[in-house]
Image (tube, rainbow over all chains, first blue to last red; front, top):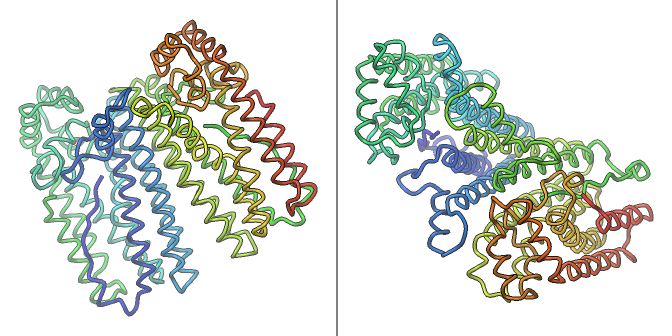
Length: 311
Length: 311
């Protein structure tokens, strides 16, 4: 779970924007994202986030360094859970603050509706994600790819790109045509974004991603990459993949073995083609859309960032 | 963590109330409480809630019965965490729905402010609670009682009684005098309520409380009861208490030993006196308050329920 984090140049369009309201709402999305990451890192038992200790590990360290009794790991998990809850509440308060600063009550109501939908959908997407990690073996091979795709639609594509654009459109008082165009742009771009993230989760440089190499392999994420690779693999390589994927104790050599198995499967090329296809769809969606020239330029820049990004 | 759950007879005053709005807001508090309980049971590793399996245990069972791979317990904890997050979001949406049904925007704004405060304070209270469970040994004996008291003020007294009354007063367009009186009633009553809960957590009948006997002892809760008992105990009994309290593997016989140690300390009488004192303070706070006769009667009934309750 991550976010594009592209800085838009809002100055140009700021005359048309209710700026304080939009800035608070955007900051609220960041706080919501922080909450989701804190909870995500607990579920994934991740040690690091953005190159620093994950929140629950910091609480664990606080426990150890304070000479407290009982289990430091359990305390870290509980404290992280509560921190996430606190951040969820604060994101909600800050979003309301943004809505109150808007001049148009209809825009505020529409923005809140999109925010609420995003909040529920990403949570359900996260649930689908952990279900796949645990349940994939009982499903027929032919279902694994559509199931992996459904996960990224909810946990990532809608959440990371489509919903923020829809929220922004609502807050800015966008027309239904503008909102529809932004969704048609956002969903495929969000899919492309997550597919790139999945490749980075397996092959990314830890110095750039801020996560240990092979973290997604240890977590056993049943990504589109994995769903594409499995049927392409000879039986022994597939057994090896199934055996190692999701083992939290994978060492550097085993990570490298898995990287090679996936590389040799030819699945990376397929993922790259799906990324390119989705970015193309996204760009096409806004060619004739009723958007300002500067908005279109920024959206196209965002699309290119998704193709190129290395972290 | 629990709630008084006393059904008020709203019919009598309904003419003065914006009923659909208040009912939605009250239901939102119930949903928020459900979220807090789901997360609480994960942190406390509780097996049961209200006499049925805790939410995370149900997900654990789903995993086991579905023939999935990986760790059923880890899946249960993650799914419970996400369920709690979903419920937090829904409680927020439902509260907004209630606010929108109110005729008075100032009342809606005041109610939202109280709700937000409650949400943050109970989360911080829960954090203080787990800190005490882990950190109590490094604090001097003289600080343990005030620290235990601070925990119940935030995690329980404000949350379970004071805040719901303050929210209700705000939504009903109450005057600042009415709101102040309800707070002066609610805080000590909430303290009394939690002290009764602490006694039930140690001595309660599982058939009535819906929780296994001695659950609070296995969790190692550093309650006011424990803080009062420790200095009253002879050295060997105190060492026994410190050794056993918080051991998740306590068997029935060890629970009984701890119950006897606490009974013989004389601390129960002190807790009962503090309960009576706080209930008295609560009742006094509304004697001359500018409240309707029927409201006063219902509040006094609530106070009596807190004294008497066995679950």
